[in-house]
Structure formats: structure tokens, C-alpha cells
Length: 143
Image (tube, rainbow, N blue to C red; front, side, top):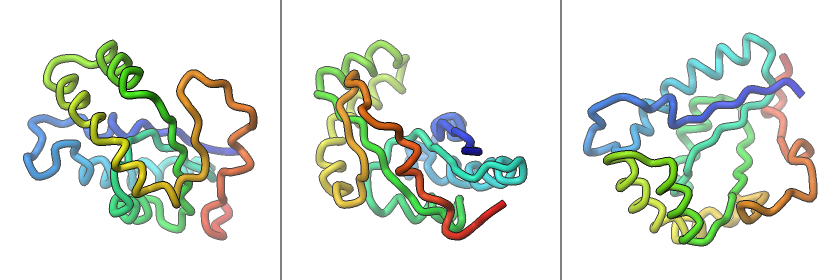
């Protein structure tokens, strides 16, 4: 399956961040639109995006950046302790503190996305199935 993978955080690394958009979501999505077009021109038919989604309202931005996409959300679950430990190991400086605070809100965000979540498993548990069958095609688009 021809695909591309994007860690959307990497498309938002620009400082200083505006106070009204502390995770630079608008910039990341603008960049994603250009990156997706380049991948599409190279034959990618699917796009895997790593990023925290905190509300259903964010999905419209992804739809605009990747026109015609059918969005599938895959949620990795972890206890607050596991999330904290992982963020503690990889975070640095102000990002570390901000992400630790942000992670404490994730459980309430996830409940609002539950009906849109198609796959969920606990971090560290092996997957019992391949994710490929759940990847939807881009709404009738064939390149």
C-alpha cells in the first residue's frame, strides 16, 4: 500500500508560538496541505499522521489539508502514570511542562471522540491485527 507518514509536531516547530495557538495547529495544517500534495504527486494513496487530537472540531482542519480524505482515528491508551513517564523521558524545557499539563486533559478529550475512534489499544500491548484493512481510501480518489 503506497503511503506516507507525518509527525505533525515536526511541521509546527516554529518559535515563538502565538498565545492563541500554543501548539501551532494552524501552521501545522497549512504545512500538511503542502506536504500531502508532494506525497500525493509521488504516488502516496494513504497518509498516516501522528498528532494529539483533543476535540472533534479539529477534524475539519485535517479534512481541509487532505481534501477528500476519510479520517480514521487510532487511539493509544495509557495510564496517567505511563503518559507522565513517557513525556518525562522525552520532554525538555518548557515543552516538557506544557505537555505534562496537556496530557492530564486527554481523558476528557477522548470521551468526546469516542464515536469517531475506530481502534484503541493500551500502549505496550501487542496488536492482534494488522491496521491496513482499517485504512480507508481517499474518498474515491485514485492516483
